[in-house]
Image 1: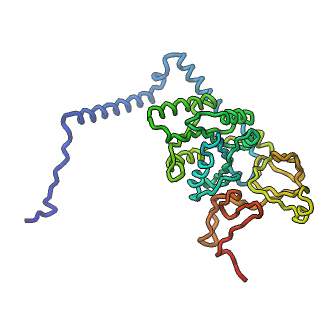
Image 2: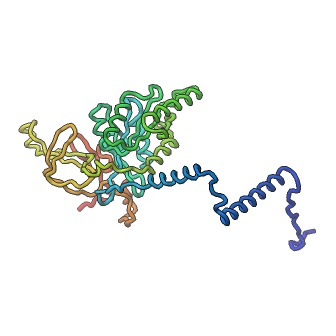
Length: 368
């Protein structure tokens, strides 16, 4: 016989009358009541809950004043206008430590594109309001000095087998001379350790050695091994996240001097002149993002490794890798450009020794 829904009665919940669970709930309820009573008493009579020791009150007051003074600082004037230029991330390390592989893994993480080779600056869009420019630092002293002058963030790669080598210490000393930008360490080749205890001790030793050179608490990342020729995605993701949210403090010398990190150049000397005399004066066009303050026509500029020259002309060009905008696209195929690497053969522009190639999609070509 079926029972009507109206006649159905469910068994009511029976609370605990004794046992460990009952005692735990009782203590929790009592603690909550005591805390609320203490808060109420403190609000009614705050002087009764103040410090009884004058020394303790003095220390608290001095600490509050120090925090307030630490918060105050002289405002830094930003002389640039428009969209900010990409932040430069310099990847430095001794030979065969994995600099190119780290850049390729980071480019793969940000743009989902495989980088054929690391050559020249590589610009990518890392967020709605941020762009990054990756540069591989050469191992000679002249290249290190040039890289230290324009680096906003330096990634120091360290091989776990050798530890900190001469190139790393030299680059750190060069960074200290040129304002000391942000520095993060990356420990590679950890997959060669077979003993977990030895790996843990090596990490601890290298971390404290890294802190001795920079400051206590400096960030040191670990790249354990390779999967399909790239670093582990989770480890690359953690490193990319720290790079994306890092705040870069502008250096006063850089903000008061204009400088350009060249990402592409062209020789526009007439071919007839070159054919007549191969050692004739060349006319070269340099492309790059302007940083610091404004640059004017006729300024004397220094080209690293070449010398001092005057600028016969300067012009503003459209941004090859702009920030994402909310403007409507003309078609579904018009996507945001997330990378710009003309020297590395990635993107619409590819640089060769003999010519410059521009890739145009078929749907954008109109035949007459």
